[in-house]
Image (tube, rainbow, N blue to C red; front, top):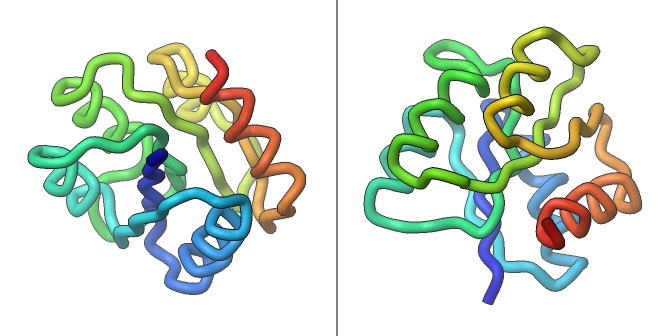
Length: 120
């Protein structure tokens, strides 16, 4: 079973992304911060992260991804944000993250990004 970990500090955004991915037939876990994501992945694994870039308070998406890569080198991820693509997004992509998806979520957009990343 494919398991996705959604990392977003906004409850409504987590619910929207979870609902869409569940509709596409995936198993979903969601957490509210980068720190929670790192803690979860210390003893679990995820086929794909859906990682919000801008979270607060605490560590942002890029720092979260860097810490997760130390635990799970090669961890697949897609980056999501309500803001435009930034240098931090590009840096995460250089580390191995896949597509950047701008919020608000669209089922087709997130579905294609997920499919593309899993096929890598």
